[in-house]
Image 1 (cartoon, rainbow, N blue to C red):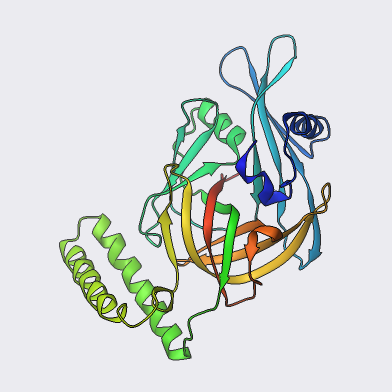
Image 2: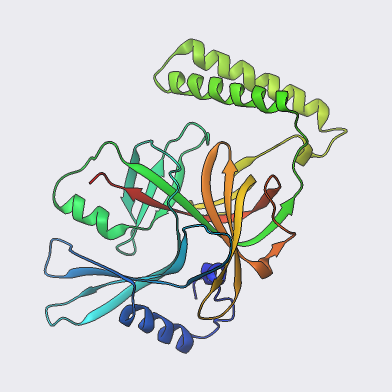
Length: 301
């Protein structure tokens, strides 16, 4: 059973028989079907079904399940794997993305080196079929793509925001722009930029080391983005809520919170089962939890 099925409203799905029936329904009644040849004698296929029912807000997002597998020469479909997903229209990054295939199955992981995050951001690729089509037609690498990031969570907490004046907000934006410029220069080998970033980090470390003795860490750190556990696409985040809505799984009736988060100036949507969230979300408050990061590459038409 996929751990993150509860994130899209299937927390009471407990046995293999119920799961098999659900996956069969996705294949038969799928709202989206994609096919492509894998360059051999088989046809790769992906069936997606949407389970979204909006009850609060008007966000144009969807939750669902994707079932992936292949057809053989006798047109018999064999399912390989499935995964729950959250789809969004927000553009999270315009940086180039590197794609690598997973060893065990025909699924892919993406790597995005966006300077705002500070690490190589690894995500689970949602639109596998689109990528395989482009790869088989020898069109890689493609420049000018954008990336839509989404996340699923099974446990989270709502935290109050850090009190900031208008001057603090303006100063933080200027600092973020300056740091992004320095990071871009440092990636190109600019020694002055590297030295400046090193000194800034040392100053930040010194300031926090003094304040942490008297203040709580969450009153000092506004947002954070860190790898979590042994799976490379899982992260521990602390992010500001800039929008939210409540949706419902139209099959199970379970309610789900859908939040647009700002984490290290990276904007992405995240969903979590209402029963797994401690606290009440609101614009300006913060979300703290563990997420599974997914990504949809918007290839130019």
